[in-house]
Length: 278
Image (cartoon, rainbow, N blue to C red; front, side):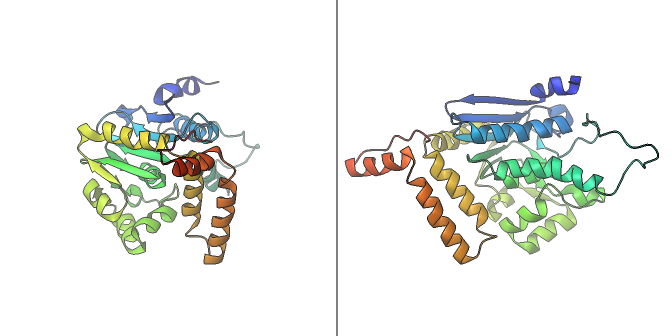
């Protein structure tokens, strides 16, 4: 195991308390950009939280006050590639696409596919792939000075990390093209207007606002929220017939959960439900 791999737990921390898993990027001196080990650790923690029945909500945040995540740290440690056959060029057809699929696409998918709701606590600039981490989250709380930047065109590259899939589904194709073609800053207030952010608050209130949302989600029926998330994420790809079939199937699955029975019992007994998450 490399030194970089040993220290990644310091650059991306993971804590669970009272049903809330907190994944925190802690590399403020590097703009909270992600090297390969940090990127993969977030992916692994999202996948772990999805399967951990003690986790009922995930908060994705970052250290410092200036940056949430400024995308990939291309100068940081990278995972070694397989050895090349003698005489092979440094780059072969398929290498770049494979890197994208196994790297940032897998990271964004781990957020979208997490069975628990994921809340983004956006403390500062979210640029490039960092902006797409925000778009992938289920609820977004932004400090009032924070911003999103689709910075790719300024680097002469095209948006990756699922951005061309995610952004137009939130703001529509014309605004998505504007943001991605021009790479202008999108301030927090504008993000709220467009439905990217659920809340915009003073920086001093970011933590408390996120905690309040996380606490409500941690007390909610986790399986119901997970299936609701699945249906909503599927909705843009589904026909009406498919969507209705999947809704019925998901409802059938939910009836087997403890929280489903607790919700009905509490309703009959005219008392607040006490959900356990299973």
